[in-house]
Amino acid sequence: MQVSVGKSTLELVQGDITQQDTEAIVNAANSSLLGGGGVDGAIHRAGGPQILEECRKIGGCPPGEARITSGGGLKAKYVIHTVGPIYRGGRRGEAGILASAYRSSLELASQRGIRSVAFPSISTGAYGYPIELAAPIALQTAMDYLQAHSEIEMVRFVLFGSSAYEAYEKALKGLLQSESAG
Ligand code: AR6
Image (cartoon, rainbow, N blue to C red; front, top):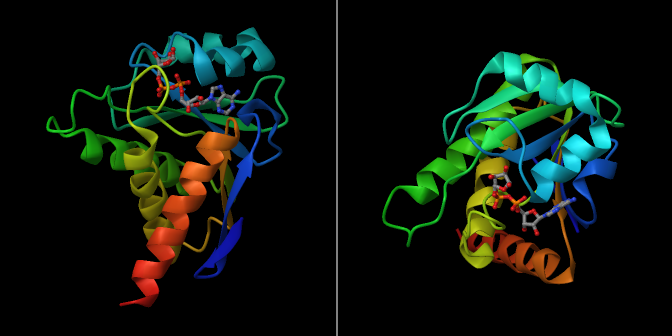
């Protein structure tokens, strides 16, 4: 599914984040930036040791912030590493931290002149954020950013499996409907 947001494009695809040809892909990292499972493990496996080497020098990243490295052997030139919240019931600021992880990643892309960014569904794996709650936050944050920042031409959400894709599709349709209802 693809929609226009201001002068930019937001799209949802089902697939593997490591295979994307956007200028940057985003990693769902942890605060150490020293690797892990899920998206993080897949990116380091596919991109090779150079990414981890650069992460070591950076020395970590608090939840809701983002850091950037090269893409190593990936098609993407850059990896933006961001840290989402660990979900603990929803009353510990998780939504704000999740939105901040997306916003910080996009701000870093803008600063570096990156025009296309692919995101995974941050926090909805090992960090336990229910995808039905995370998807509207992810999408609204990206749409708000694109409305104000046409220098980012394309944001792609890469969803792993059909149920994740369907959750994002449902959330996007919901947001578009509530927008057109004013
Ligand atoms: N491409 C796209 N999406 C994927 C891929 C892939 N190759 N692999 C998994 N997903 P997770 P988190 C989906 O656990 O919840 C790591 O150990 C997955 O189905 O990768 O933010 C880090 O080091 C899920 O929907 O990230 C941290 O310790 C989503 O990506 C911790 O996990 C995110 O799952 C971060 O947890």
